[in-house]
Length: 385
Image 1: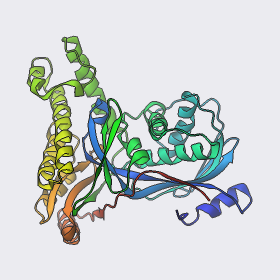
Image 2 (image 1 turned 30 degrees about the horizontal axis):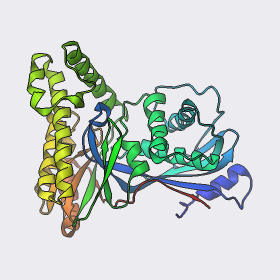
Image 3 (image 1 turned 90 degrees about the vertical axis):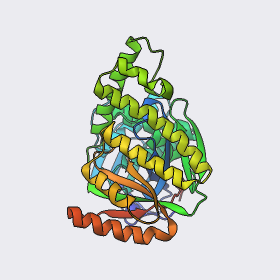
């Protein structure tokens, strides 16, 4: 791996010496291919890595000293008295990693490290999970601790979910940690079983950034609360379920007798989205891109109308994309309420698609979207230099 410009020089200045043998970690962002808001409902998701990253370069130390190159900000803390907080600054995510290691009773040391990333923030591409995975693996490497990949991903997940209080599921951290080159990751969020699906077809995912940001925790926290309320209501009515993903599609209509309109919308989305992930997995395995594209469209409509996490500009991008030649399907990706949409596009049409979506979106909104064809680099990488 190449060290991004400025990282090594900054680390040397922090330590007051050169000729280091630092540990370098590169953790990718991710796109949610299918399975919107199903992960924290113990459902099914499809996701994959993108070639945007967070890097962490560091050495072991007694305490923690971090420098965020992109913000020109420092963070320092001891490894004692780490207290969970409801906050989402990068320093809170960082301290959450050490808290999660301690919670799992792993003995790790501190680090002096420099952090840098190029994942757009607030765009639904999971920059926070990439930061967590990068730091988790840096600490593992500098401490000489071996964990299996899923256990490492759980450290990152618990830092965000339990320490920072963000109602996420495991998808983001699992994808950044476990993703494989040119493969889509299928995750059963109930039992954490995973499957790799090779991208062995002549089409690629394209991320189109709407340039509309959102607060990281707003949508997941609110929707998770609504789903928990619906689950409790059904359990009180005698439903023998542990989560909403336990509800079988054929029994969904019976929930109307118990739930109010809003709760019924949320539950319907979760149950049918799980079914879409199952059908989508089958379509991708068979390389049936036409069917998969239709399922992507169904997912977006459900996220918009039933889960209510879309945004007018996301809907506009989906509408424009759907009219372009070579586009199999398109949908919002990530938590929603801003961020990006995802399109599956014939490889021979990607340039035409990029030009058309940019022109039409700018004419409608005055905003210039960032259009990024996705290559799939696989999960986190660690190297001692």
